[in-house]
Length: 142
Image 1 (cartoon, rainbow, N blue to C red):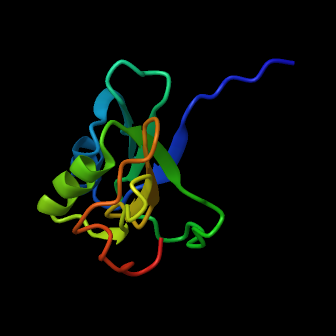
Image 2 (cartoon, rainbow, N blue to C red):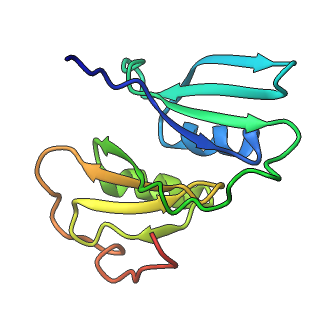
């Protein structure tokens, strides 16, 4: 029996804020579907050249009241990045909190506007430890 990865879906409260966050990570919108009858939009965003690895942003036009609020069943999204220090600096420069800094030159965690945990992993070998990341404490939870 074959299995093929399709996407990871996350609910978003503010579509524009969430799309901006994932664009900061380097993802691009690959498709969008709006349902007037269902009163929702789904936007798929993926890394350039990887349309088969999207995150699906689901936005309910009338809010999420009445839907389960326990998001603890979701772990995190993970993306490999070319240079973890550059990516974390780019995110920080654009107002994103680095919850778990890349002190080890290998791994960092941030959160989306909807509190989705996003793991960033250095492609290849870890980078040499460098400031300001080495001295930076964790912020919040990740």
